[in-house]
Amino acid sequence: MRLQGKSILITAAGQGIGRASALACVREGAQVIATDIDAALLERLAAEASGLTTQLLDVRDSAAVTALAARLPALDGLFNCAGFVHNGSILDCDEAAWDFSMDLNVKGAYRMTRAFLAGMLDKMARTGSSGSILNMASMASSMKGFPRRFVYGTTKAAVIGMTKAIAADFVRQGLRCNALCPGTVDTPSLRQRIASAADPVQAEKDFIARQPMGRLATVDDITPQVVYLLSDESRYVTGQAVSVDGGTSI
Image (cartoon, rainbow, N blue to C red; front, side, top):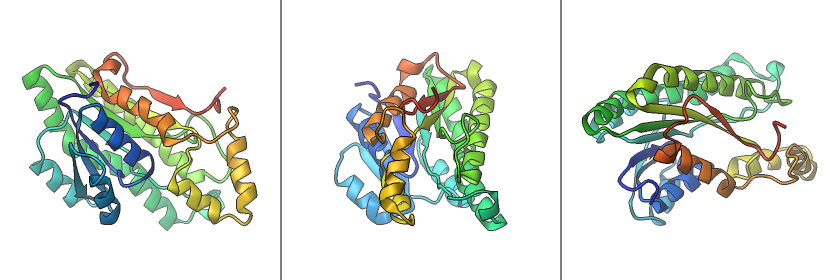
């Protein structure tokens, strides 16, 4: 198994890419700590897989993040998946919306990484193992601008910059840090955005049209890259913004 013996924590594991990634990592032998802010979603996830523990966690709560890191054994992998997609241009983004997206999408990953990194580095030094941090970014970032994704694209560009900085600081200690940049993925979050549009049928067509492959990604299109980047198979890959985008960046 590709993740046998590895301890991996995943945020926003209750649904969508986080949930699918948690299940995929368990299938590959990892001991997964699945976190989310929704207890009901975690309960359903726990019923689906052994080798998985769940933990309520709001990555915006610094004290909760620090307390969790203090009581868990050192990790081998961390997937910072939690995030929020704000819809609108700069004119639709007041300071409260800006602060919320920055706090969740960027500072959430910062809090998690800062809390768990020391333990990861210590474990690597003691055991001679390697460690991997994976941050959820997006094609809507420094890679490409999309209409009505102002603050979302800004936060995901920041995540890519943070990823490269962490990778550069700790590469000689065996830690890898990469960013995952999906195209448009068919998740509950996307379905909510489609349903809230003035014309949901046209909104879905527009989302599909963004992908040159002519379809939305499924979570199963994304999870193989998650497993790869958390596994030792990616031992020579760090500081990268890895696209899984159906040709959007061609």
